[in-house]
Amino acid sequence: MHLIPIKYHNLNYPIHIKPTIKEVAGHFDIEFLSSDLKDDKFSLHTEYAAGLRRFDTDIIQSFPEIISSSTNRGVPRLWTSEKWAEEFAQFLIGLFDGKHPHIIEIHPPRINEFSNFSERYKIFYNELQSNNIKSKILIENRNGFGLSGIDNFQSFSKIIDDDKLNLKLILDFPQLFNFEEARTDIKKLEQVMNSIDGFKHNVDAFHIWGQVGGSSHRGDLNDYFNNNESMKNKFLKLLAKLFVNSDKDIYFIPEINAGHDNCTREKCLSNIVEDLEGVGFKFG
Image (cartoon, rainbow, N blue to C red; front, side, top):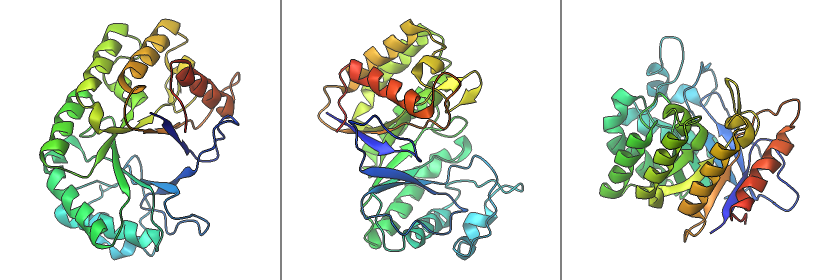
């Protein structure tokens, strides 16, 4: 088993790790992708509905269902209808402009719309397939949405299996721990990590980042666990137990947007890499 590094923004890995896939933005205000992107060498991070969008690009104007389903304040809503799912696929196909991403990263709808997600996802997937888009599709947990906590993961993994969805999971560990209030509670942390065993066969990627106070995506695991070595080491030990001897590779996305006075972004990533390698993970 190897962790497959994905280059996140302009963040550099330690010199011995050479990522060949880079993450690029594909939200609803993006009009085109960089011309230097190569087939199968990028991961598209699609709309995540965290804030306002302008909806003023030429490409998005072709998709009235996506625009009209947004909130009155202009915040996108995701997976609201079968038509939305079809338009979402068509938006991405237009954005690709002939390029094929290695990964398409999608996000869940709000809780009250999650019961219809499976059927709407199939429409999205089939539209991509009919246009010869063969990318691996991964869905990330987001707090406040239909895929937030361990119970959501367990029930949704069963849906993936029962409905034979061509879809795998991204585990954003900090979001998961924050939702489960496990960041400072070692018993809750153990419960969360042990629960992952039942659906780890559907997990194909990790997100790991730090948190300084209430500032997310900042720092390393020492910062995330408030310099509590016992908490950090417990997480790493249980993570290794779950995945180090797995028979499949896992994508690794270090969503570190900022460092702090004692730790640059690169140093924070280096610290996380060192932590992971220290419990047996290998990057490949």
